[in-house]
Length: 422
Ligand code: GTR
Image 1 (spheres, rainbow, N blue to C red):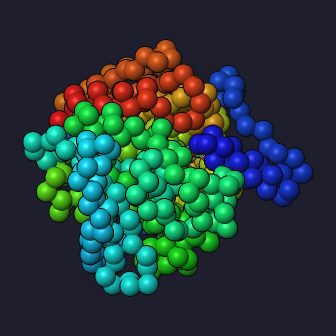
Image 2 (cartoon, protein in one colour):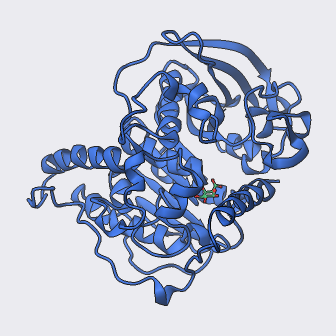
């Protein structure tokens, strides 16, 4: 089903692209044609001064956050927003008695017309103390990550691209459990981790006009080229979910792991970069605009992503469509903003669109900042063999198979979390 979702959305955009152009541009999958590029030095201030201490890095960190905001994701509004957390249901015997499931709506007190973010939280029932938690958005509503029949069907806008699981832009019962395979709740809970998720469309529906009913309709300034995009909004929403988790006694809010796949992985990266309360970050095939270096001409490009998904980034990012080398940052510096916290970057060999090598090199490029903290990040510059995870505080694998989240991926994330987050 996931492949169908992605496949249909790609072909939809391919068709649209083709209709507007004489022919579909070709995308490079030949390593020999990647070309040469020079990456900006994460440890050099814009004024040319070299960063050698943690104190200087703190300044460079602020500068990099600003550069990413101004040029890539847009500025995240910094005003605080009053939130109201309302528990709508508690199920003490979820997942066959293994979990306590809570459904909590995050309301925006200052914006009563906005619909809430509906969070579902699973906490291991066997836990003797507050649980560490994987916090990630989902693609198709909370009802689609579980087969439990009492999780309410999302009533929000849902893409029709997935056939009968969605009709008139609304989910149908057929989508229940549709992505449960990507969220192996039994395994995660058995390992002592809680899971918190919400539908990304609760924050902003994923289409160019979607902002009109999301958080960006009330926060930010749509006239500005540096106004935040949808990815910025989704990242912001992850931080609001973390605000809620900080009030939840069953959760160890010092051990919240930001997790995301693909476009939601891009959001998880930006959330983890900005919000240091996230204890660790897991990026599953986050690709272009995520872990993959923008300067590498391989798979998806800045121009293509800005054309297919004009609402994801700030308008300013589009000005780099044909001059990527002039970007004042590259994505290794986004990963550097996560340092010294544990980071997992994962690729799939069958997902060359996301540029596995570019994702790996993004992680390699963050190494100097981990070193500044006396840590080893990846600790290697050699691209590993398939299904051979590498690294220390930063880890990486290139899995066999297609663009997806699999049990193999989760096995690695759980081991990483056991070793570095608990
Ligand atoms: C693709 C897009 C990727 C990735 C993916 C997804 O169409 O080109 O950057 O975000 O969608 O989210 O599954």
